[in-house]
Length: 590
Image 1 (cartoon, rainbow, N blue to C red):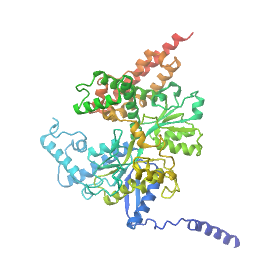
Image 2: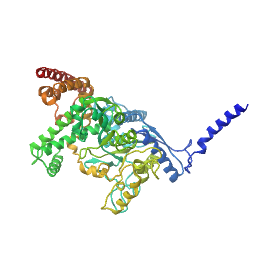
Image 3: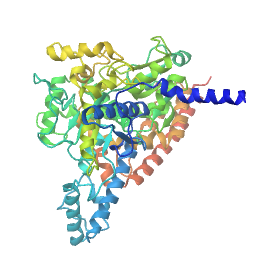
Image 4: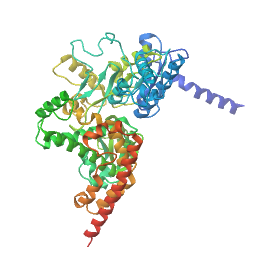
């Protein structure tokens, strides 16, 4: 009897502990019937947790009720965009045909096509069907009513500006706020200083249908112990360093067809090689600015007074960038579907180095090193070699809870939401549990001695942030000024780079790595010019691949056919490169 009472007493104490130690927030918890906001996101669990808690409390304080965010984490940005396209197409078709309207065979592909000319009717589509396709496209873009059709989601939070702009062109997004309804103090400080710029360094940070919430750079993470074991004494501070044969078989790389952020990193890498080529040719930044403006005005790759040699340098740098991606692929230990796996593996020593997004790298360095500055893992953004892009929040067409979605946008762009990105966990107004290690987008979190109010706000935040945002590697505005993104060089190649990397480095990856090992064994790239020529030769089918043709090749050929042709080309070339390298090794053998 006494034994049973003791057991019951212990159980009672255990059940009471959560109530005894519960922290009183002054805000009641969410209950059935309170608002729910549905958000699809590629963001990690730490960020989802902090913004779910922070926004619910902010909303309760302002509007009297907590909010539950129903996060839909279905994969990376690429998977999310495909999912949204399917959801919108299905919902719109049901609404359209429910009104007794026809759904032509070509309607699904035309509905959200980003390049559509109403005057260019294909021969395979009748005039009646073409008129119906034009009508349904117009109706899709003119309707923002969840009672008509909806994806069932309110917002997409995260990704990149490229995907957000593409989603806008597809018609999936609508303006977050109508003209004149943007909350006061969100875009500009009282003295008129812009707090949320439209963009910097050639990158877009906000547009009517999406607003950047955090800023990101791309960089390199490495493990000091693994680097020492490989005999590499110089850290990889430039993208080109990752093409060094000494890293063979040790790099962690994410698949750019699955990760929009890594696709952006690869595009940035090509940008850097273009800039290096034009600077090596002797052209100054002022000349580059003037000629790119002239080319933009002319709408092409030639313009009066722009030297042909300048364009040749750009094209040479572009080819160098594609081939640098190839060498990184040759050094890769794997290509993963998950971008955050790379820093995790580098921190654990399972990979020696890799490409990653800045906040993944900084977060894992802090975690795996236990806060020690001399720990094994290091992350660095290559100085002057990474643009500063924005992670946007996007308003989806037909959002079921649009007012609530607007409030979340206001929260994440305001000071309260921005503090979660960069404050230490437990600091007043900061995150509850996780140091998110993100770079806020608001100007008043960074130093600016020319604007006293901005500088005062920076000094107010400074004691609470995980890192000093005045340091060159953390000052996003300084980083943006140090790198200028030239859209003409790579913007139209973004999806090409994704697919081409897959064919060149992933689908033919076994052959690539075999050829690379054979070249290294024969003395390295400089000792094997014939093998390197075979390794790096661009495809000539279905048409010769060049800087110019790569921009639009995906519109002229079926994507699966391209991938098949490119993969077959590289498998043949890599086998030939391996053969030539082994012959070279035999010639060199005593």
